[in-house]
Image (cartoon, helix red, strand yellow):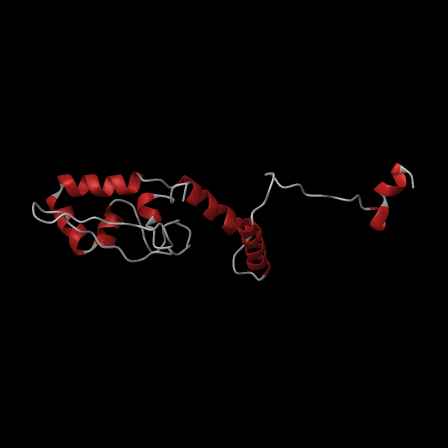
Length: 145
């Protein structure tokens, strides 16, 4: 078989091989790709929806949480709102927990509690960085997680 014959097999379509962008694809990545492609095929969301969400997720950081805390430090009324209704207080600094992406994607986290330290009580929060991690407020989990 000549080079020209090999290039025109399967109805004259050239063979295509997609090479991964990394040396090794993990099992998790294979599952994510398969699930994403199946969801797109089933019409649960479009590839464009996925692109928008990915762009949102990649750009979020801890700035919203910083704004939230700073405002609570300097605004006593906001601090009381944050203690009483932290979801409403979040909206005041631009965080919509129910639709954080701004294009209809619901949050995976819709509960939030703010605790106040006092001279006699200091709260220590230990987060396991699981699905309840407050991404709209703190950004993505650290890369090392």
